Structures are given as structure tokens and as C-alpha cells.
Image 1 (tube, rainbow, N blue to C red):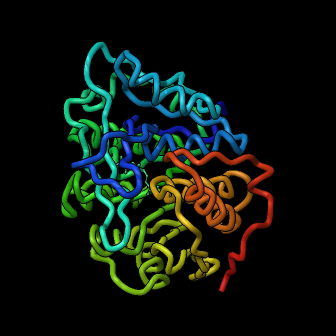
Image 2: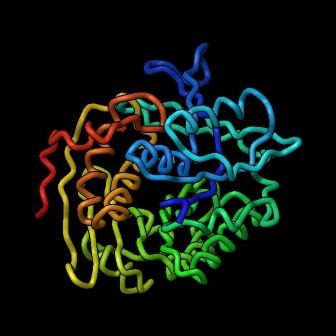
Length: 316
Ligand SMILES: O=C(O)C(=O)C[C@H](O)[C@H](O)COP(=O)(O)O
């Protein structure tokens, strides 16, 4: 097996407004790379996992800026598809400061990735893996990218490869009915499902407190393991053998928020790949906190830093 995890997603540039400014009046922006699937790959690569992130990117410096950020931490880019034309996706971010909420402005139409088709990718390589990781963000972009993700998941299921789905619902990309229609069949095939309590209610109409929502998702989709987040209120886990478990989340100062959710998923998958999802949740609670301490979606962390007991994470 060449890879521990393979994944497909749209590489982007994030342009973030400095604290104390608004997009309408800002005259400088911080440039970092973004992509949920690449963020997860980048953290796992730093923890020693062979991971491949595939995307479709045009030539040029903007694409290189994205690729070099993930290449620099050891993500395998040999499955990257290069497009003769098309844009690199951008997204602008106002972090928000109480009482002003954060705000995302997408500029991701007409991108090279939107033209990605099943024929573009080297599936022998992408299926040479222990885990196929997909998110709702990529499935949300176009009918073609939804088809791509479905092909990836169906191929993985046929080959007995573990499928991990992070629902990651983005209301600016699609509506709950479409998300449910595309993501529910994927959830049914998943070995591990990540879904926030809020997304469970919005997309699947699954309500309840954290443990109840988590159990209902496991039963509804027949997924062996479900991990649900609920901002700072807790992390919830459900499996048939353990029932429902709740983990406290520690509040820490925030330098830069985007990427913390992906860091949590990556930390949890580090546990899935090396021991158990339950161990992974402890890693994930740590990597998510580390993610908040520095700029950029990609969390920089070494195996030694992951091992330092900086946490008061408690299982109840
Ligand atoms: O493509 C999009 O629409 C994205 O949102 C990409 C995001 O930058 C990351 O996926 C961060 O997400 P969190 O880790 O939940 O903060």
C-alpha cells in the first residue's frame, strides 16, 4: 500500500483581512493556502503518514503558491492534474471581532478545478491507499465535482478501502437538500463520519443534544464510528461497542480560526491510522488548539509537539 490516505479537493488562496480592518477598506491582506482536504493531508504528512492530495490547478505563480505550501510539509502531489487554463480559487476572509461576525467572500467561479472530470485522474494511484478521505466542500462545487467524489467513494467501497467523510457543510456553496441528496449515500458507505451537530440538523434533519445527534447519525447511516463537533461545547463520539462519549473542549486564545476543524479531523485520523479513533480524538483536540495559535489553514506541528501533554482534555 503506497498511501495511508488519498483525497481530492480544490486548492485555494485565502486572503485574510488584518484584525481591526474590513474588506471594504483594507489595503493589505495576508496570503495563505487553503483547501480542507489539503489541510488534513498536510497535518497527517507532518505526523509521518504518506498522503496524496489530488486537485486540478492551472500553471502560474498562484497555483505554485498553493502547491508549495503543502509540498513543503511532505504532501505527495504526484496525483495533481495540471490544467491548460482556468483560475485558482480565491477566498477572502474577515476574521470578525465581537460583535462583528466573521465573513467569507468566495471568488471561486471558473476555476480549473471546476472542469475536473473522472478521466483526469490516476485512479490506480488514488486507490492504492488505506483511507479515502472526502468532504462535502468538493461535492458542493459543481455536478462534475459531485460525480468525481461519488466515483472516488464507490471505487473505494468496491475495493474495501476505508472511506472517511467530513460533511463540512458550506451554506454559500449549496443548499441543505442538495447536500443531503449527495452526501447521504456517501455517509452510508463511510467507516468514519465527521459531522458537526449543527450540520447534522441542517443537512440531515438529525436533531438532539451532542450524544443523541451522534448516535442517531450512526444508526441512520449504519456508520461504525461517528465523531461530532459542537464548537466549544464538546466533541461527541459514537460506536456500537462504546456507546456515546463526550469530550470537553478547552477554550484557547485565537490568532487565526480557519483550519482548526481540519486540524481536528487530521489529528483524529492520525489515531485511526495508528491505533483508534478514540485515541485520535485526544490528538485532534490538541491539533485543533495548535491550529488556532498561528496564521494559515495549514497547521504546523511536529510529532514531538503532538506528544507534549499540554492538554486538560477530559473524557466524561
Ligand atoms: O473551501 C472552503 O470553503 C473552505 O472552507 C476551506 C477552509 O479554509 C477550510 O476547510 C477550513 O475549515 P475549518 O477547519 O473548518 O476552519
